[in-house]
Image (cartoon, rainbow, N blue to C red; front, side, top):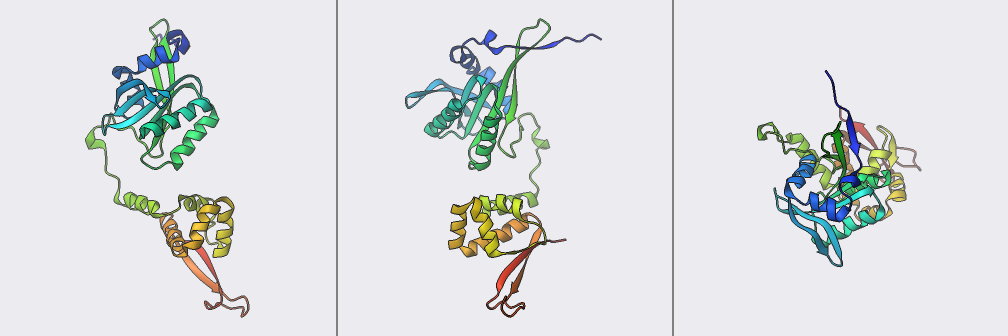
Length: 271
């Protein structure tokens, strides 16, 4: 059996101008469907070159599942700071819930920036980084191919799955997600994940000192809300199937005394 040779075609040979050619092509609903299918979001055009103050959005679209606004910014070159700034500016103007950056090539710094934004934005905001290519087999007509490079944590493309195959989240996963969201300062989760060693004994003062080195503002909140700090410590332990054991030691009397003693804690596995 013979096979054809897959070739990549330079984008500018088909779309010479980013706005006039590529954005015009992508703004047609049948082509937005190609992009939406790769992401897992049904898209429909609202307006091309929509005004955002003194600037213009490449494509203003909507998610037809919920009618939420989607900003699409196109770049037939390597990613750059300018386009990343434009995405944020346009999104704030329209209060867009989803932001899609379509690019020819990406720099690792911008991929990391999108990952960081997805990690730190609220769950209502979603950012997608998508690569566009043109491919052909031997001398065939060029075909566009979208590849999803970066997406929000936990995002799943369910457009082509039968509803009967989409299972509800297990009850325990739902409960853990509620528990995770109950922690007032998400930075505490990041800190404890990196810092805590199982069965190691810590004083609360020591935990605060190390936490403050990276997250001083958040740590100041817990200094003023010690009860919340205890609650959030316990919530993190529960998330990781751990229990917190308390120990008190009086440095003067050299014994285990709660009165006048220093409080130490250890994180131990439940099983």
